[in-house]
Image 1 (cartoon, helix red, strand yellow):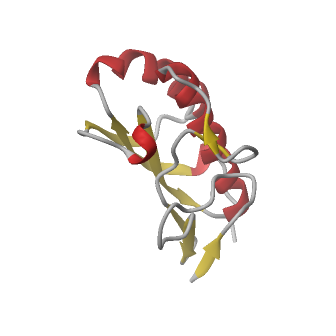
Image 2 (cartoon, helix red, strand yellow):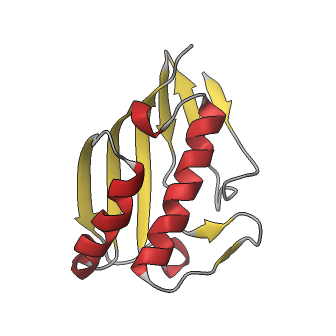
Length: 125
């Protein structure tokens, strides 16, 4: 197994890694809307937070040797399902290959963010 780590995405908030590659598959931790340059959640609305989440996701994919086009599955967490349409609008700009996906509403997310995305992706080794 290979640990995936990059300074271009938020550091882990607890005892976990940004992701792992095993047998050509990347498994990511959930990405939230922390700007890695400031270590803070800056965006206050779902559109801004989803943009930051997707930027962070792209950086961990790159660090793993993968890309958005190689994502097989995402799991998306929203703090309010009323944000579903706006979340999808931004998400669709990044995940253009339309990977399999689950999207659920949860009571609370870390740092009280509005969304979180985790991924499973192919790594070209």
